[in-house]
Image (cartoon, rainbow, N blue to C red):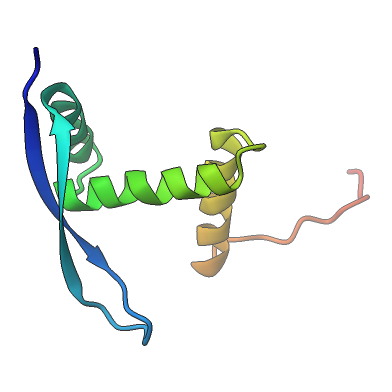
Length: 96
């Protein structure tokens, strides 16, 4: 039987666009906790950032349950590239 571990992480958000820290306690099975810690290390994120990312992704997937996760992920990546100025306009209907 695996034991649950308590992980504390911070949420960043307020209604004025500023940042504040809020502490939330989460109980996770030991195996899940080890997997999240490993993924955080591989992605160069803190444990708090990794859990925040998973929650963010889960909310988006739940709101768009008819779309595959890969499509959602690629769309968010494309949006970030455009915001960073890396996007290029695609010339529709032009065959080269």
